[in-house]
Amino acid sequence: MSACGCNSCGDPGTDPAGQALGDRLADWLSDLQLGEHLAEAGLPTYVRDAEGHARWTDPATGKAMTTAQLEGLDRQLHSDGSDPEHAVPVALLQLRRRAQVRAELVASEWFTYEGLAEVRGATVNATRFAVHRANADHTLLIVANDERTLVPAFQLTSEGEVRPEVVPLLRPLLAAGMDAWNAWAWLTQPAALLGGLVPERAAADPEEAELAAHAAVRLAERVAADT
Image (cartoon, rainbow, N blue to C red; front, top):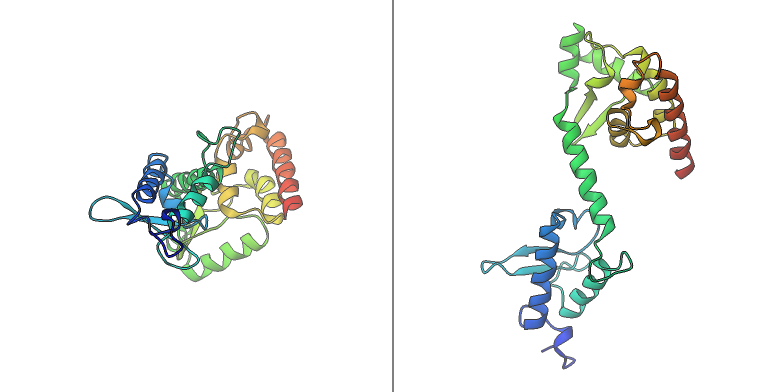
């Protein structure tokens, strides 16, 4: 029991109802594969103790959460949708999807400066300079991943040069300041604006190239309007 005399304000570790709630929330989020995205969303996080119980931490204080705080978190996580009992935290689902997409992209083909330099038969320094110049001109997509710079391979020829047909797609997106990961995903996955066609592939089809370029311009306009 807490200093105020009620169980709901106290440490869930000594409050059976609070411990049960903390475990239930952790189990629910784990089943949805959302637990690992809590910190990124600015939400409280949990770890399991030796007995398998969830120990929740308040990100603002770094202290264990009280039962009252867990009850508030429960309401917050179930606040999306018209049916709170079955609602899911949409923001966390979006973070999970973004993480899945990024993992898929990183699993596809890309180059580091060193790898691209080898393909081009150039020095690493010359390749790095050329890559950043092309990116500044909005004709080459580069993506920061941890401490590495990735050059997605879809936009390059077998000689390591930019595919000319992809430039009309790259230019408006990069000029609009579109997030590099989002641009990579949109360019290489089926796009609603293209009726399910993959933009970078459509750009190589003379019958679809103009439509693909138009879709890139429309998307760039949306991105610019949101910034």
